[in-house]
Image (cartoon, rainbow, N blue to C red; front, side, top):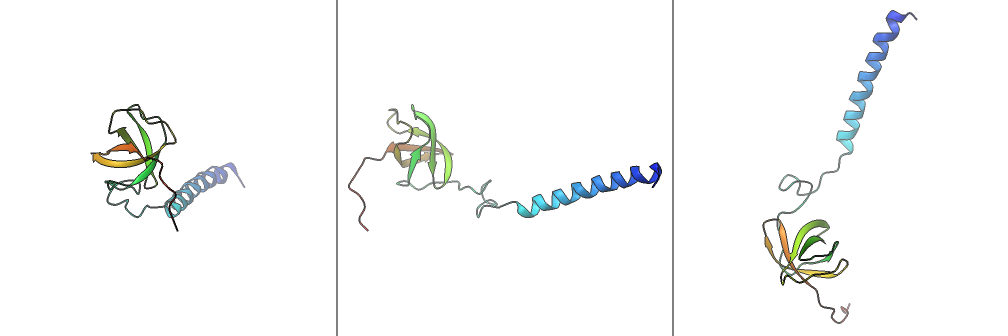
Length: 110
């Protein structure tokens, strides 16, 4: 093999590798069931009464995890809600959830 054959072969191999990587990434990409409606597989609204968990302190704003996603949220009362507290969605203002801490109640039967 001569140098005249090695360089074009290396360029062709590099292009082939890039094409294969692109195809594999496209095939293995997971799409959320609502991705066409609202990016990244998310939902645009959350029903009042839905429960979640405060991921950061809400003082009065922070991040909560509801319906399997992280949302910006603020405390309905303006009072701080510590991280790790179970919360309940009261309403929604655009993409910000308005939440209250979920009071501890009797364990669910079942």
